[in-house]
Image (cartoon, rainbow, N blue to C red; front, side):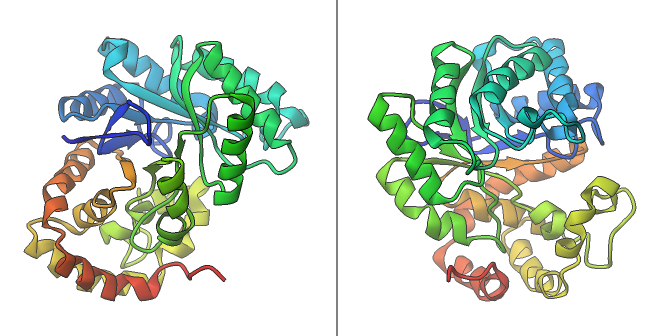
Length: 330
């Protein structure tokens, strides 16, 4: 395993990390989580990503229970969570969902700490922007979490570049802890935000990127070329919103052109896709997901391909995927 600094901080994160979205509680119980976390840790992974909204808190509970069973020294691993969606998805408590106001944030961190069974969370993200709350209110609440020792670093997830810069400027103005990292989607067919929109932020303020969905929710494994297989992520009722993207005809057809490239490099299509994300020096860590130990072990094999992605190989990949990637900014 290789390690990179998270943005301008001194914190080093493994190039590949392990996330729990979709899988924990839905496909992975505590016993399976212990097995996969142990295997990931043995392979050098030290960052484990989570969020309050994943399985409505159950994901944090499972991961926390697994940490306790494994008994690792707290300094040996990094854990994250994210706040915005809340847990009260159907209720009328308007300050418990879709917000980044101070009341919600200060109570959300306490809830996550309880579910994890931890004294602090290393990385806390604002899961989406909230244009209805003054940016100063959100930034001060995140600063106060850190001052209280409940979190060590804070950042954003899927925020527009200007909103991140506004948060950074507010923190700089008042001497508060600044946002350190952003967690955007990034894969062969979703590039613009990382490669264009965030380019100046990475250069100017040293923003670190902890990217998610390197396999485009499974599209880049190739398993959706013949439709939605039973037992897959796309077959889950609560993941129905992904199906249109997973069955995208042109993108699935392009995979047949990528497979020979992966084979030439000695890897699989999925390993090539993960390695392509990891080769970007602006990416601090690539968050991978797995519902089985075999999937986890397969993902780890991507590290062997990173140094094989020469400019010539990248040009071949671009020729296939760039025409099908998200459109350039207007």
